[in-house]
Length: 469
Image 1 (cartoon, rainbow, N blue to C red):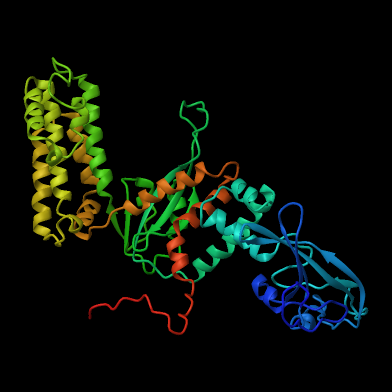
Image 2 (cartoon, one colour):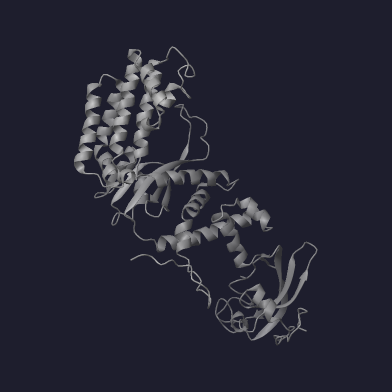
């Protein structure tokens, strides 16, 4: 019977120690440590007695500063670092190790040192794999740092420090091996809740600008504020390969675009701009029908119905809307703005993502001309005039949006992820940590795809699917 109580032949004991069990050592899985005994303590933790294994003894005997082989043992010490869970119990190591006396007194200022391993650094209260597990829980599984600390019985500071070290290593490796991108999107998201209003009456808000790869969907970088300088700092290093940059109708971001990069206006924000003009007209005219929307047979108020796509409206509701708007001059102005929005949507409907066919430039010119002609015929309406002026300023990006089919949808999706990460931070949301958490949450697919996959065991069926030539 071996040292752990298992039947079988015990392994040879290291000098000054007891025999160790090969099976328990393999189950623990920490290179350089040999298991001599296993027990349970009163807290429900598994206490594993370990010693330095014969294969790591020589390396652990050398001074970490000068590399001199220690001539003799000064004393024996015991440390109790915590480890990951095995089953439903957390493992606590009880490592009886030697304190060596460095014999190089002339060239080395270190008098003594204890045995250490990469998996269990000196003076460590946690093993390296437990720190990695804490970083994975916060960074990859989006667990709040406080929840991860409770799960693995550590302090909040320890969990936060473990995540910071893990995220910095992961993101540095990702940036080092990141391939150049051809199409990217730039957008901003608010950091936290707006602060109190300043002297100008505007609420103080903090913002992040993020650059997103439109191919893989991963975040390429984050910068504080939503200015042209923030955009330039993110675009540095991508000018050589970047060809398309999608954005909303933001003049600061447009000023930061390097020469030779095609700006693409986001289709969603173009339609949103047109819908906003309809709301502005309702506020300017204070337009009301003689009957409530329930009496008109509409499921929602009239100005809400006009935000919907015309093909999504019920034919009966569409007839009611036209009849209601055609009743007076104010309604006819709103109807003209609504038709201008649909003219703009007809232009954007030529995108390859909608038709699955690349549009001809002549088609794009015809739809854009139809929009401009309608706006020219109703230029006395302020909302139509401002809409046409905005589209004219962004005419080339609008045309490129139709011809290329690119949009800023992936950047908009990351806005939702960033807000979700901020909600679950719970006291762990300073700008640096929030940037780490957002990048970790939005680059999981890219980071996991780069991890080497284990080779299949002999006789194991491969999951690869044969692709057609």
